[in-house]
Image 1 (cartoon, rainbow, N blue to C red):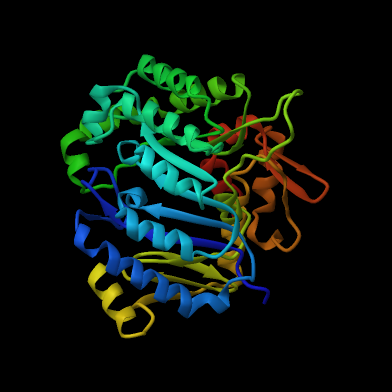
Image 2 (cartoon, rainbow, N blue to C red):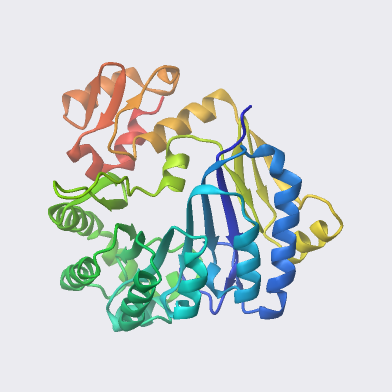
Length: 370
């Protein structure tokens, strides 16, 4: 084993909890930030042997990583292993000029959670940042020298109309981000969000395919590469140097690479095992204060599971998936039928969804699986 080349760091702190959120987060607790960073660094030290000498990516996600106290965040950034690309997620309202300057010393890429540029829909989502906060955040990051910014958008929000989505895409493009992630709103059953907006969510579900097509057509027409189901990066033009602006950390996951996750609730997948740290902040910190790994759930990944996951993740991308070793994961009859239907292309031992197949996405992939 040469070691995992991708590291995920989970920072769970948020100023409030969005009703649709299903991530491991805690609200407030500013007094616990320093102790949590201590625990992160202890876990990193315990697991360092699982990492390669030099990493391809480090990704700080959350939560709202940029809500972490500045001194604690600086200490964490300075202690992280060297990597080719370091990404941090940020909520726009947290991006001050001082924070941007702090990030520029260790971070190459910032993923901003814009979600929508409609104040009415931001209120529905329970988001704090307003459209001007997004714009100011982008300008401050640019001023600090950060030249790789991603904007996150959500569509299918209760009350959203096609014109709202068109405005969101136009506002995002006006900021000239290197990368855009556009996600269908997924509200988990039983959450307060589904209780409040259940009927409207059902109405929006009927429009999701149309919204998805609008997102793809608008962004690709603007010169972005639709390289993954929900992700788009600026494609090089004739007068720019070739620069791969895909989200390299996520790309590693979609390509089936090993990754180590540290932090409360973080997931790791290395060789034939997957483990998830328990979601309890108290138990996480307490275990590491004792010098022990945090409590975890461990799963042994069978060849069957690994094959299915490789197909499911690999077909999200716009590049062919080599099928060597994956034959047992595919239904040959469905492969032949979907190829004839023009939904998949099966060439030279590789498989890729056609444009029409990509619009249908997971439904096509599910039918392919044995």
